[in-house]
Image (tube, rainbow over all chains, first blue to last red; front, side, top):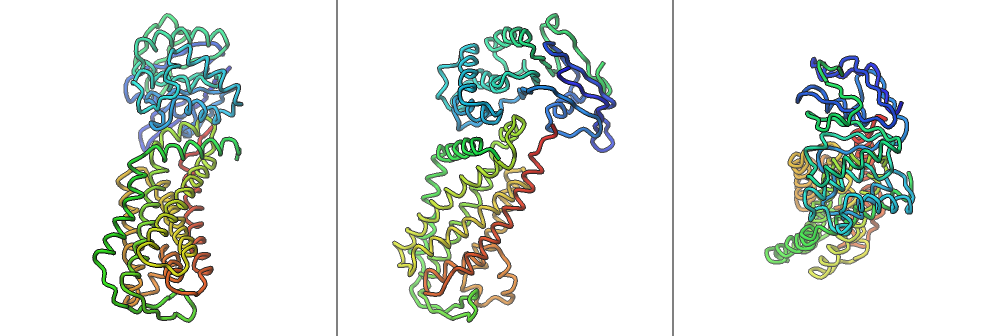
Length: 199
Length: 254
């Protein structure tokens, strides 16, 4: 088990958002969580990645976590190369490890020519490629993607699914949290968030 | 704290600041405008005031122009560095948060921001000190610059505290304006202090010791170690509080 969340409760005032939620994700699996706006998906995601504390319950993640936020979360004044260095340091990677992984991601997602460009000068699609690549830099064992479809352009979208297959072969589990899911046949399991629980 | 991570974060923070060319230009222009206006508008009649932080509280008589050059030098350093520090903490907070989720500790990130801020405190204080000395001869230039560094440190740490505490940009600016305007830009004027009804209140404000140190260094041969030491203690208090709040707001639960 790469992710196990048990008895998760979370409320905001009198509004109970998550109720005794349970979630397990196996290595190499592809899982989706769908739900309407306001169903609690974002709350669950913030708890899973460690941004928020659950009211009660436990979240166990074994191995490295990669998290790709929905919004492009990058420094406008730093270049693509500097982002890789900064996030490589955050993950505790050595220089050669970081450079190897960076070169692979730049080649796979086809944005190596922008290496020295500042994020402020990148197109939305290229910025999204970097946003995703930073989540993949340290070769995570669990990748959590928040609404990935909304930010991807067609090229990134296609490459993304190719990369997902590769990651799964390497044993990386992928959890997609979104208000809708495409390519349903590729998923091992799709949960629906309803009444604060996954069904 | 990991020294490699600290170094990378410091370098990146500094690069981000240095790439904001308009900000750099304003850091140069604003003190020049402040001091230029003093030069154009203030008379050179001698005015007496007390150096309240010294034990014997000596009264010195200095040309009005000189007093205002020093007062506005202190004010411009305090203003600029508090805003810069606020911006360092608030700007791109969501990206900094992502770095914490990826493994950086909030302490490493705040320390690197403080180190970048210290570089700017030294640069801005030296620039303003030298500029003031061109317009009015300062008795002890390096001590004066060191005093400006102390106001930069105190108000830089206040900016870090305000940025850690307040998320909204406008709200943060207003909190900075409130204290900096009242304290550095008004109450610490030695001519106002002289006639103030309640001087005790003014003595407890953050800019009191740095302002006193700047006046002492600029116009007299008295020592400034007590005033500067007290200023750094005040700044350290702000820094400690900001560290605690920043840690609390940025910590993760994994």
